[in-house]
Image 1 (cartoon, helix red, strand yellow):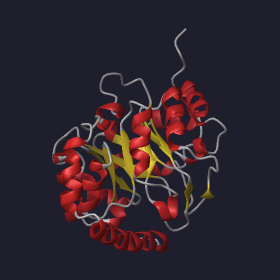
Image 2 (tube, one colour):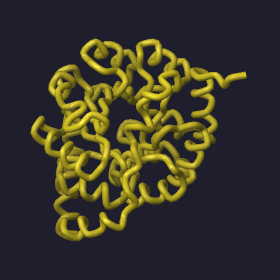
Image 3 (cartoon, one colour):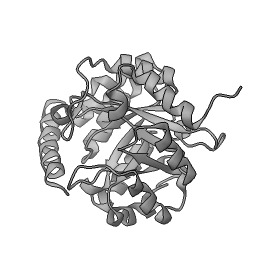
Image 4 (cartoon, helix red, strand yellow):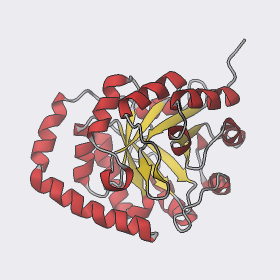
Length: 275
């Protein structure tokens, strides 16, 4: 792991233990029957029924360690509403507070505004956070391979599936892709996606070609999500030309005056409206 990721994970372990002390797991579990059933994140983004339609998971993010503050006028529900109007298939919501300016409460605020499924994007390292995610209304969770052992990924996937949530298993390196290949689609097909993050954790730079270099190792590109460094409709077109129809786009859209219009413009380039 990069030093930044090491630092984030170390802080996250402390945060989880503090949260567990304040709100015991049994209290978290008791909230779940009152929460709306999970929206089907997997079905929203995997183009089985219409393979010609590109799906964008649009991200709500205030800041990041690499970019600093991205958006000052930050209203997660309003941004999600704009994304919905712009054609997003699903929403990714950063919930880490210290590094990304997020909060777990953003998930329900977003779901109250839009009918789209919502991914909790955070550094999930403990089963407590999976239960916490569902209690907060999350329909999917991110599992970052660089932060987890294979055994941890399996345990967290099983729990997420039992709770009806999709998992997005994210990798940065070829080594971690090879480690995770057998776990995509586990424990049941239709609950697991594979994300390739185009950010180099050493230099923190992005390169869309990173997805293409790793593509030959991926058995089913229908469940592949390309993440980071995607800025234009042309980028979406490059992904499509390689058989990839799902992308997670965040920082570029968050810098635009109207993120929804920017998203609509990107999608129109790759999926022109019929005349």
